Length: 147
Image 1 (cartoon, rainbow, N blue to C red):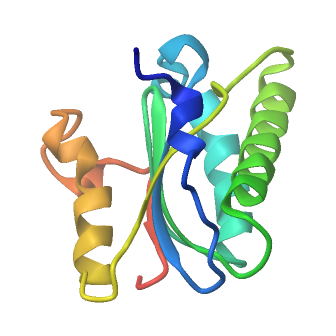
Image 2: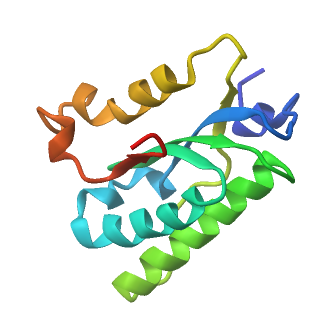
Image 3: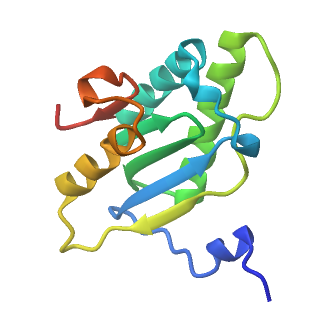
């Protein structure tokens, strides 16, 4: 029996106050976010969400990593809101229509003993590990509430 994305949802429990590391990928893994004019409106939309419960995020060429603290509702509802808001922003800015994100996402609930700031540092260092920049100062598409 093969492993399918829908199986990721099996056993998923949304817990208020819980912090999750979430990853979602672009539709057909298209590297949409290698372009400044595509990344800027998405970053602005993510900053709007950060006022609620987005603790840290990094936008990579074909995916997004974020740390989110669930305040209410389900993690799936939050991700649907995130994907909708960012897709509308991107499509409006580029005067296009079409899918931005693949369906589904991967999540990991942080344990109480996991260092939240260390998780955020690891998350936002993704552009360094991917070789996109030599210094995080050179990568504009990330944020953390601790700044």
